[in-house]
Image (cartoon, rainbow, N blue to C red; front, side):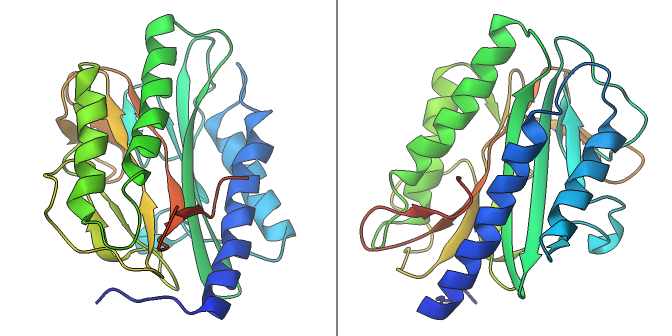
Length: 248
């Protein structure tokens, strides 16, 4: 069941969303060669907890970290560890925050030092996919309109749109109805209503849309070893323009 959030609940989600966005802004300055993914995770944990909030990923279905830190061909759910970032890497950081019982969820892909023009284009287009999609994130439109716009923009650049991972509703729980695919057909799917809150998160691969899973059960990679990028925000559906709760 898709829940319509009440005004007081939306206000709480704004607070959680702002802290989520602030976490990503905070960590950006630490994205540089030589920094380990575990160090990034530790700083994110310290930042979130210092604001009287909880990292929603930590312990979620057994996930062992406060953030997903996904490097190069890792699409999502990269587990932080001893890997030290290298010049030319790209790294996707996905964070979730629980504040006063309400959730925020957002992700960005960052450059590590100087990166190739091809890698930068992938990052840029993935971000553009999000904004193309949310042009349709308003009451009365169909979810498929949003999904189709993301797919169309990614594929116009020759990129693969991940099928096996999708966005989601969000509120008191990190994952609520509806599922929010990054591919689909216009005029199909759930009709969006004012008060819906959804996490829209294009996961775009430079090559094939197909993915594989590491033995850890979490780390998700492009099947052909190509680069992947991720851009996500928590979005409030309204009668007019949507409100992006995690963009600070």
